[in-house]
Image (cartoon, rainbow, N blue to C red; front, side, top):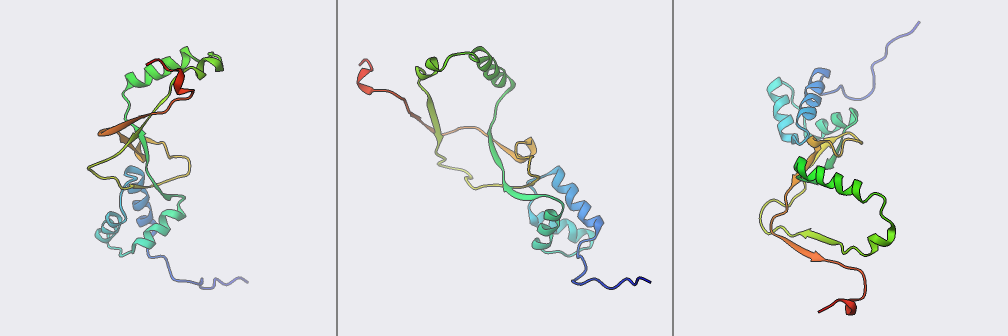
Length: 154
């Protein structure tokens, strides 16, 4: 004969219906904050803390990560990059040593420079919902080149 014994620990604060509501909100808007989720649950009649919501999201396979910053590219930019890559696919390594590469860094004088968090699964880091498109404004261009400086014509 088997007997169901009471389980150890406190009962779940969030019902399965509340957990599915949280998951639906996070799936639609991954950058939703804990406070918004707390307020949604409160409107539904459940009181839960930020830690409880965090634990619920972790139980469903999500983790809190900073949103990836990706360049804001138009389809014309993507097509031009793809054409360049296909044109130079078979270039020998000696040709690439002659190329002068430039690297731009962004120095943000005004605006929000903090990290934004998203709840996402492990392999969804470049999903457009989990990224922040960036445009470079107020950038300072820096040029790095390889080779002897004395050989450059003046």
